[in-house]
Each structure stands twice: as C-alpha cells, then as structure tokens.
Length: 124
Length: 106
Image 1 (tube, rainbow over the protein chains, first blue to last red):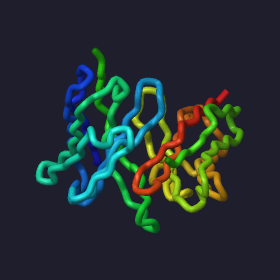
Image 2 (cartoon, helix red, strand yellow):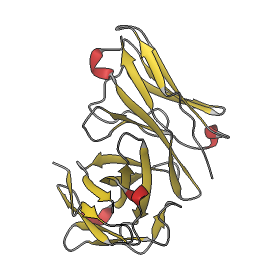
Image 3 (tube, rainbow over the protein chains, first blue to last red):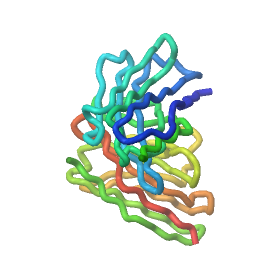
Image 4 (tube, one colour):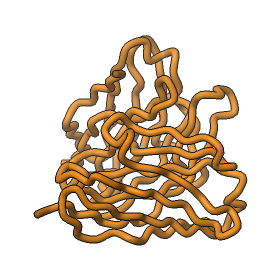
C-alpha cells in the first residue's frame, strides 16, 4: 500500500526556520518525483515545490522561491522541505504528494497519492 | 503568471449532472488534472490527462478539455460527491491550481 507520512510541523515565529519530512513506503520511492503542496486554513491548494526522482533538479512556486529548499534521501525513502525566513502567510497544512509524469507530455505531472499533511503555524 | 479560474460554487440536485469548469488561456494546449477534497480530508486525484480516471474513481466522473476550458462532469450526482474540486495544470515548469469549486448536492 502506497503511503506518505508528513511530520515536522509546528508553531514558529516569523523569520524562523523549520524542516518538514515525508516518509514514503509501499512504492519505489527513488523512481518518482515528489512534491509539496500547501493549503492555508480555509483556502485552496497551492503548489510549493517539486523534486526529480534523483534529486538533481528542483522547482519552486514564486511565493517560496529563495526561502524554501526541497531535498530527498532515497536511501531513507524520505522527502524534506527546509523552510526559512518564514512569514505569517506561510501558515498552512503542508502535504507531501507522489508526482507522476504524464505519458504523453514531458512537462505535465499529476499527484496520485497525498499524505495527511502537517500543520505549520507562523505567528508572533 | 498563469491563472486558472473556477466558479466558487456549483449546486446540483441528487441524480442530476454537475458541471465544473476551469478556464485558462489556451488551456487546450495543456493537460488538466482534477482533485476532490472532502472536509477534513486530503485531496484525491479523480481525473488526469484531461479525461483519464484513476483506478477506483467512479465512471460518473469524467473530464474534458477544449478551447480555453477544462470541464469536470459528474453524471448522476450523489451525496458522496459533495466536496471541493480543484483543477491543476503545469505552466513553464510550475504547477498552477484553480481556486477551487465547492460542489453542493441539494
């Protein structure tokens, strides 16, 4: 059974740093891109970042570019999101999602399995 | 940056057909996926590559993409279909979600 389990969320003051983890199981983790998607309380979904299966390339949404870093350890089947210079507007539930590339479009992906999310609250 | 527009809400009577739209510039040149999210739950993929259904998704959910609009259609809507629905496309290496549509089954 495919599972992804996020952890590491918590309360942090503006300007602080936090690292989220996503432990994957039930599939060949090293063969898949992975992504982070967040959802502010009562709001819609916002894509945060994607990393390739090998970890050699990563991509970010404009709102987090330069502040967040995504990485993975394929030997531990774990995805990470390092967040720094946190802002109040980064408050959200952060989901880890397995990311599948389309068979017919090299630049199209979709998220086929999602975790339950870990909550990050940025507040003074 | 690329934008996707969805109606905030759609209402439908049980057994009727619900149509949720997702509009974006030249959307037909991209592949859309759709996600269903029920209260307190994580999103679930219901449509990918415009019209493909993952295993376990009922046939009454279908998708299409033409012109500037991708559409999620629910035929014979049931109470269990009540949820928020989000469309997603990729543009220049980044993922873009629509604002979401709350489907209410009256």
